[in-house]
Structure formats: C-alpha cells, structure tokens
Image (cartoon, rainbow, N blue to C red; front, side):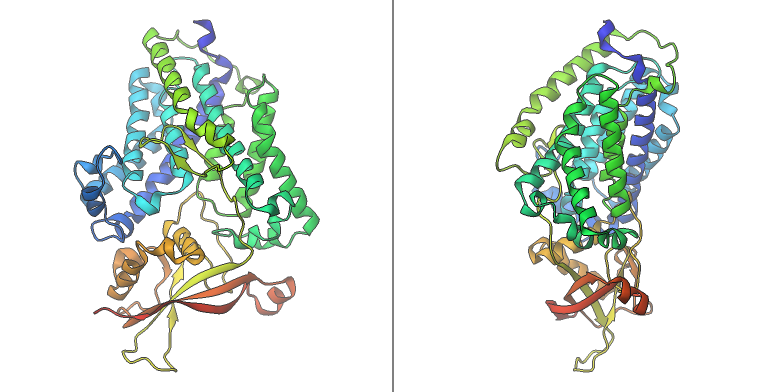
Length: 468
C-alpha cells in the first residue's frame, strides 16, 4: 500500500527515536538512583505493601510477580542499558520485528515501574512517556519507511498535550484570561531554575506577551499539526520554541523535552536530507499498525470527551496501560510561595535556645543565598512532592511521617536524596518541619545581600518529634 508509508519522514523518525531513547534513559536512571528510599523494601511507600493490596488488573507490573530491591535495580539498570543502545542507533541494525520487540520491552519495563510507583510516579509526564513509548514500538526502523498512521497518532498525542494545557488554563485561573499569571508563576512554580529569578523580574508587559504567546501556541497552533507541509512543520517548530522557553524558565523534569521530541516527529525531514532506499513494508507489519491505530482511536474517545468537558481533568490515565491519556498543566497558579523547611537538633532536651540545623534539598528552595540550579530533565521526585506538601498537608499524608523517621534513623538511602545532611556523624535527636513564605529578592536586595530569596516564618508543619 503506497499510502501506508512516507519516506520524507525518514530523518524525522531517526531524530525522534534517538531523542525518545534519551528521555527513556533519564527516566530509568532517575528510577535506579532514587527507588530505595521512595518505594524500596524500606522506602516511604514500599512496593511490597502496595502489591499486596492492589490487584494485577489495576496495576499490571512485573513487580506484581516478584519484588526485591535487587530485582528492581536489575529492571531499572537494564532499562538504562537498553535505552543507551537505542540512543546509539542499535535498533536500526536488526530485523524489524526484533527492533519492535526491543522498544516493547523498554515500554514494559517502564510501565512496571510507573504502576507501582504510587505518589512518586503520579506526574503527567510519566503517562506521556508511556503513551509515546507505546507508539514508538510501531514506528519501524531502517528496514521500512515511516508509517503514516503512527506519525498521525504521534501528532494526536502532541495535540492533546498542547491543546489540553491551553484549555485547562482558559477554563481555570482567571489570571490566564487576564494575562497576569506570569506575574507570579516564575516565583511560585514547583522548582525554579537558575534563570527563573530573571524571568520573574522581566517587565510586566513582557509577561503579558509571554501569556498571550502561550495561548496562541497551545490553543491555535496544535490544529495546524494536521495540515499539509510545510505548515505542519512550522507549527511543530513554534511548539519547540515555546518548550525551549519553558526549559530556560524552570525545571519540569522531562515534560518539555518529550513534548519537543513529539514535535520533531511532525517536521518534514526531507528538507534537510533525502531518505535512502528503504525495503518494502511487510504485510504483517501493515496489519499490526492498522490494528494498533484502530485501538488507539477507540481509546481516544474518553480523552477527547475530556477536552470538550467543562469539568476537564488534567493528567489522567483511562486505562492501566497508560495507552491514551488526558494532559494539562497549571490550571491554577499560586500567588504566594510556601516551602516546608525541615530541621533537626542533637539536643535531647528542648528549650527556647535549642539550636536547629536545616536539611538542604537538591532542587527545591532552602538556603536563601543558594541560586536555583538546573536539574531537568532529571526528575527530583522528593523535591517535587515537598512543593505539593507546602500546598496542603494532605499531599504529604502517605509518606511524610516515614520520611521524618528515616531522617531520625540516619537512613543512608534517604539522605542520598538530599543535598546537605547537617548531621554527618550521628542522626539528630529531634526533627521538625516549619512552613516559610518565600519570595524573590529585588535587584537591590540581591546586590546588597547576595540572597536570591527572602523568607519569613508562617506556621508549624510538624512539631518536634523523635523516635519512640
């Protein structure tokens, strides 16, 4: 079937697959380095306890069959190795069926992690990686030209990511409609980056332009993805530019990067390089791709209905395999930044003069003189959840108490998640948590004090506690 493939997207597929493998590599690396403290056998939300109460059909995973920290590490590091090999182009040197199986194994391994990750893996970009990774299984390799149907499905994912985010903003916080949200967002976003302070201090008219441009990119441009070239490619390029702007202004794990990866699949690669001669498409492959396309279109009913609903939901999966999902971000924007600051003391008897020392996190604001750092696309899961905890203690309910216990125990794996442990020789006798109001300093304050933040105490989050 001549209509089934389009060689003009040969280079686009190559770039897309290499870049997606890079995102997979970061995701598996994040899992490998952080899992013991978060979901390990002695983690804050242990996988063994989760799989005992949640059946297979709700959370299909290899870890439903067996779990140990050693087995999880094997899965995560195997994912790293397989991703790195795909990044190097290994899948283009093996038969088509074997390449598809390779991508499928990668998807299965990450699905197994996400489905037992609980709160720590409840972010929209987890489902986005799985949905994109599932479609990548059927995109082929050098043994065939890129299939048009899969390219269309990738644009459908990108459309829902962008249009869903645009709609949730217009329907949500009025500051998006008034073009004022960026007066606050650069300061109150979950994890500011090294340039976020400077973005915040842009003139307010520039913030209005930022918001207006965002609305155009998310509410108008996505429809152009389904037009002929070169319009579709230009639309994809605008999305890439917008995402790079977001990369510069904050730390959003791999959300921006995988959106860029999706956009690259919509660019006409023939403008840069001609495709080599590619073999004819096998009949079995055409049948499989058509069947998957029908499946995805059927499953798209609920996400599409969600886009049209006045009660639109963000970042929701409609099936346990995360095949077709709803996306969105920042339907509301905070006006004030609160941070939970954790402190400990060696003193066994507390009094007014007790000396408390602060734990330092890798990404979230703490020390007012520390310039925010760039971590994305690496995902600091604990730091992100600490931001949610500051919004409401309900977000911290399932894990925060165990986190504090691990600090009192001096747990090595938990301390690895932090930048600074103020008790290197022995664990503290007591720990506590307090809520502070953080705001960016002004230019004058920065020059005078060297501090990027100003903070003031608001309330207690957790009273001093110790091991019983």
